[in-house]
Length: 134
Image (cartoon, rainbow, N blue to C red; front, side, top):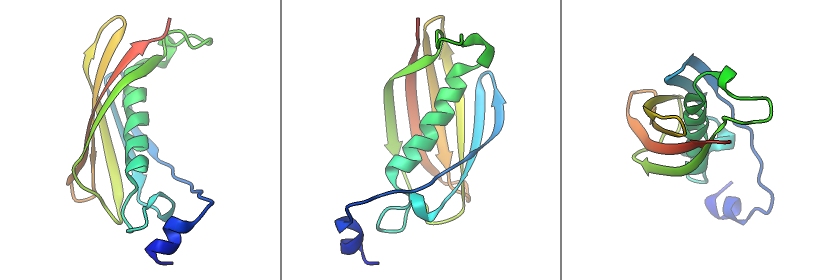
């Protein structure tokens, strides 16, 4: 399928997934294989798929201790700001997201997430700000 055909499609779907490798209160490391369902018409990862991957890793890091979240959602860290710099892309391999806490206050949490390609090349540098739900 060529690029014009792909861009002319009316129905889009796809399945992307990743695995959490490390989950500590202030560090999350996740791995995601590059897959066809997450690629744009040019054959590289869709920016939305990269950001989705980084955002979930950041949110899990912002959560910290799962026990701090109540069953009704109180305490869940809602993202209120997301700043992403897209620095590169990949066509194949396994991507790694590394999220770490920059600041953890009572209500405000700031997380930095970097996504790397298999060769260690930086693809995304993301900073997210989260507020704890009350």
